[in-house]
Image 1 (cartoon, rainbow, N blue to C red):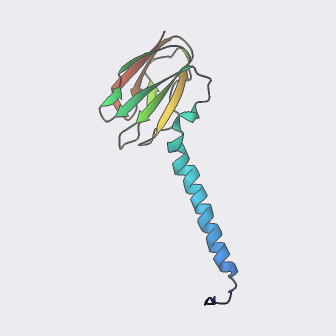
Image 2: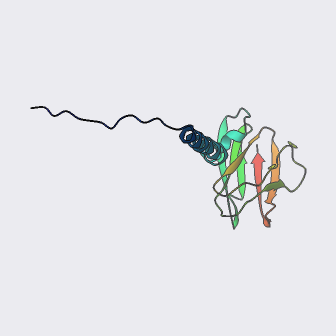
Length: 138
């Protein structure tokens, strides 16, 4: 014998319920755009066409590798693995005058630059001036 199921009567949801849900949904979107997307795609900040890729790691002790040899059209991703902000700054006039971070590189984030012109790109960390490095484009 089959039992009949009885369900409670449908209740109307108040407009206040929808307003709270909308605020929560908006907060999720803002948090995703502000914090999640930069971590998922940090190298996409540099939209230059590139043929090669390389990574320089930034830590509290400096850059690793300290010197990196690359070919033209190489996108180098500077990855901050420290708990502090860092900023890559040129030490001398660069072959391509655009090489420098605009803003600090946050912890667990990064910044990318595509090296198009041959030459030596010497740089230091504005947060730790004793840390320096060099990208040599051949």
